[in-house]
Image 1 (cartoon, rainbow, N blue to C red):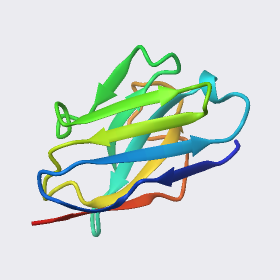
Image 2 (image 1 turned 180 degrees about the vertical axis):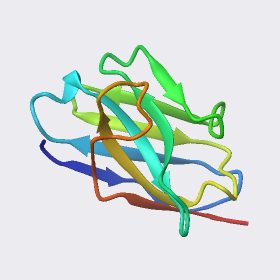
Image 3 (image 1 turned 30 degrees about the vertical axis):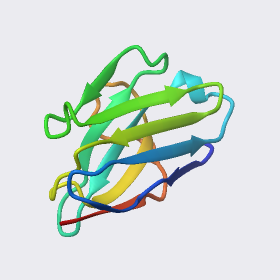
Length: 120
């Protein structure tokens, strides 16, 4: 399945922005829908966003619509999550993953995660 490595997490004040990156190995990267899930302490892992392999179709969780933007660069084997106007409910470990389709809420393979912390 290759490897997925997330980066870009950190501490940001409420209303601020972060860009998360996901580096994927494997020559079949462009064949997969790719997306993000997150898990806050004491909470279940939840869907955030997913983009199909061409980058043409995107789906977001209602809680992040208008604030987060998912994108991918297949040639570079990279996926990104631009997070703007971060809210108190956004802190979590964010995981990138491979999806069977953009209509799935859970990936079948994911990385180690990157921590996002929001201060106020």
